[in-house]
Length: 467
Ligand code: 4AD
Ligand code: MG
Image 1 (cartoon, rainbow, N blue to C red):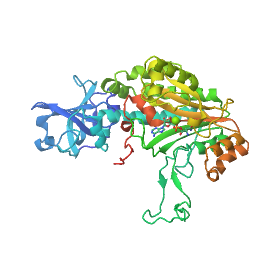
Image 2: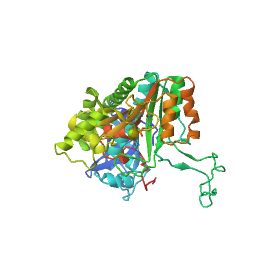
Image 3: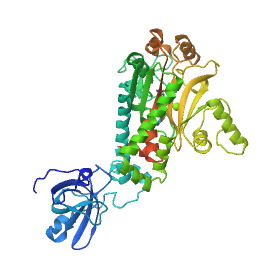
Image 4: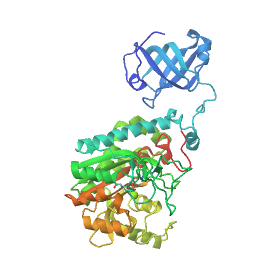
């Protein structure tokens, strides 16, 4: 076969130099046609769009043509021609075809329209579907948007460790990391495991958040963000929880509650606008096939001002709704941790726009949040989104050594693990604030997908670590 430099489909479809000799490589999506002429749709992942290859049957060997089946990988040389019917401006009139990888009829993606559940069982192949190709390209674009946003604002990308000995959220949902022989654990007289001989010489886990290390960095570099894998061993099998997810955690020295909320709002809007500007074809596809309100909802968020709502007022609204006959599964009262049905009621039915809820009761929030004068609430912020519920959790941090210590004691957090964190409050402490955005929650919103398992390549959930 003649060597012609490969053109990606995304670039090929933009070309206008009909008559040029071109090469494409990719996977067969469909093949149709008559005895004389076949139309083969090829996709190489560079775009949701396929290029149509026109095959004059009599010019090719019958045995070769037999191998052009759905899923097969081809290299095609041909002439770029103006297209009449493919929905694209150009197509390829094939001159030479090589089958790089044949694909027999056991290939599970034969026909279109598989259920999401079925596709999860073949997560190793689902990136080859239109929907997952679109999701994965958008996922990449959102990662780029995140780095661009923070870089342009002068934040430094800071790498917090993945293996850690501290439980940032204090929720005890950590996966342990050990090299000990689990069949032969050394224990002390009380039956507690002795970690002295373990790899790190103490109990270690996978991080639930890079925030504590992020605070160290922010109180040195001024403004940083982390963006990395995060692990939670919470046994919640919901469409919004993963055991392994990615989190973005900016942390800013000298920021107060209002600057924090401004940053949260600006950041999300930037990412959503980036998707609207840079993922048009993929969003158009998802809007058509998955969620007809998608693009309108994305535009809505970019153009709307988020509501800023104290928790206490939020509870009043929910209590009024209950008094007016609205049924929630979980009870509403001052002090309750809002369930996603409550959050969604506020966002989807009451305000009909994103809500930043602030000033939560301290009992339902983590130890590091800045305590308000009332002694009851803390300067936590949750950003609540339509369809998603909580997309961001953040707070102003308690910068007073004494107040922080008091809270740590109240909550019985083991002090010896926290010494390095407390040093920030001991040596030149400063007001600072930050938040965590769940990357997959953002992707749920931007893609219109409804299950978090479908916006990450290989979801990790309770009883599932396949692939
Ligand atoms: O609200 P969370 O637990 O806050 C923190 O971890 C803070 N340390 C963040 C900070 O202030 N730097 O988690 C932050 C966000 C949530 O709002 C949610 O979007 C996401 O992380 N998240 C999850 N996403 C997927 N699966 C899970 N199990 C998640 N848990 C939290
Ligand atoms: Mg939270």
